[in-house]
Length: 514
Image 1 (cartoon, rainbow, N blue to C red):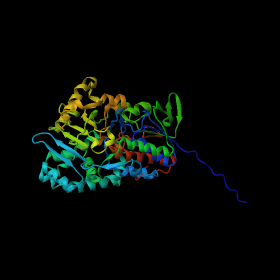
Image 2 (image 1 turned 180 degrees about the vertical axis):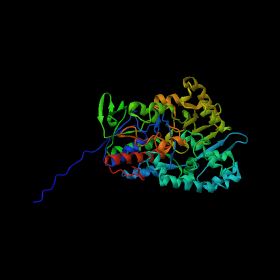
Image 3 (image 1 turned 90 degrees about the vertical axis):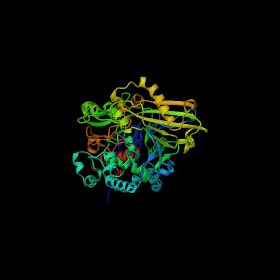
Image 4 (image 1 turned 90 degrees about the horizontal axis):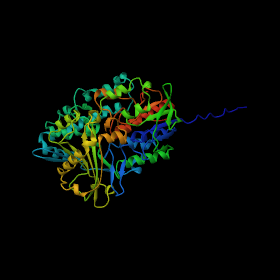
């Protein structure tokens, strides 16, 4: 007689994810799809972190942080792995032009950046006809660079030995780590304004194109090759869609639930502490801002490498001064995205790096109603203004600076063709570097996290599997691969893969290194 052994049912692994920003949402989705019992804790009353929409009773909608969507392939693959399609959950509108660039000085020149290479060459020709002929060469080189470097961005880094991987050796020739973005662009473009048109994107990392490693010329390439998108309703709607999918997969999302600390037994995380109660977990994923969250959640005595002292001495991105303006009237003369580039851009950047608040700053302005009427009441506009400024390491008193800088930012809008905006404002909100720290828990008010210099990239950045404590994982702009939505989503895929690997789940990741 054959007696069949009773089936052994393993309990589902429990994963606590701290923070419902883009990385936390993406990690929670994938881990739940792989069979984990996931609880997602968020201190605020809404999901999204900085990728959320601010709504007002008057009907204005503003993205708090990111205002456009780039390289949707990664998130589309995550949605597909979770049993749905990105295009079924959110409408992405491809923009043309991608943005408008206004170069101050004499003569003042405006170009509309477009993915149509024939038109783009004509736009560059306004600045330098010679450089227009090199556009195709720039695109071809960066197409190859991205292809070579993609495997590096898709895997984890645990130690310096990982720098010797085959993928790194193949990519090294095109990385040119000894060059800055601006210097690398010099191989293609002579005119500094043309180089700026293809390098201001380093601001997405909070860095200067004159210091940022040359790898990041791929940022502008991604825009031209793969498009710039506006999610209908704002970028925060992507976060809402991710939360919706996560809940369908069984993720329990607990809003307005700040975590006091991670619970440890020795060096192993065993759960999270909330109001004196321990909630057990087999793994803990931190999606909070690294410089702010890690010292709060993990005792300094547990951390061998990323101690309080090292975190305090690390290098951080710039901050931003923000204005969110609900304005009566519409402005068809403004593009969806406009960047006003100050005449002495290099000096502007040097001032920010030196802790000086610029008096003639470059300014980014979003005017989304030209694409999406849902962003403001009929006949009104939701104007978003971002001005790069120093982070809080430099000690500015923003309670005193804010009124002056608000007036300066408003005056800069006049250079974009809105001379009478002041009397049209019906709603206003601003965010200073101090408010990024106090209200949004961003360490040092450094909006773009840890700086992306060579000594804080790859294995030198905090790891997705946090080596200082067992059972703790990181996701978000402060860990590998870095900042920016598509990169954070890729990081979430790496992190979920590592958690799944350690817990015996079936999470797939393009290139896991164990």
